[in-house]
Length: 319
Image (cartoon, rainbow, N blue to C red):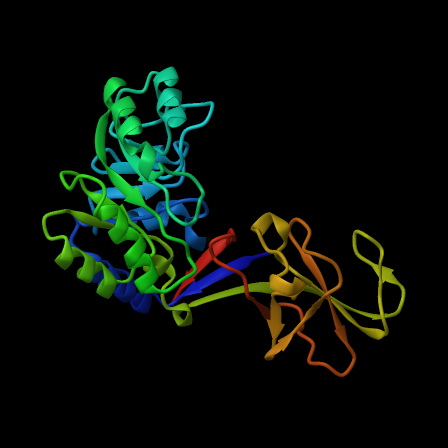
């Protein structure tokens, strides 16, 4: 039972360091290492991030303890009803409203914060009319404001993102850094040139770690193949249509593997999509291959097409 991420080591390292250099030096780049570590796991990515930046962004306060004391954890999600004792004192937390400030006060926080500015994502962040009151609340709480941040959507063009960021750059004071996301190197340089008096820091996650998909392959091994002719199979006694083979592969919902958009199977073999008999379950998935189609055999590797931002590989194979 294995979900394996295979990585072309030299190509991946070249991409990471080239992309990082394009975005800025160690003072102007914040690698994002959160959640499942973009399929690599957080510890492995942190090793790389340590060499390219002095600050490393994490998803929540529960991930901040992964960052060594030599570097600063930047927490991207506001604090809820718990502040873990493992939270490093040098962490920088995010606030996007007066409520977020009050929450930190109630937890006894006394460190640094970044004020998140509202973007078209509409997830959380301070609206223009509320910036002054939130900044006043931050100061009254005794927090040190470390900077501003704005997070454009995934959708849209580089020009759209630049316009959204530029609007905020013209509104908030320029004495603190502006942390920006989802922006390419060319657009970033344009912004930095136009706002040379301000420090603009690029946060990068997906494009930094997963930029060129050709150097990454996700696969799972075939555990069992059995002939069938009708009947039912699986956890849900799913009807089998016609004759063919049941193919059991070694990954499932515990790995974060699920149907792709449009309920399409993520499994492929010999350049053919393999039909799932039923959705992935825990550590395996049952596939059905009709007679006449190319069928994998035990120990073959089946390709798994999944966003690496949601899967948990059992092992990483470097080549």
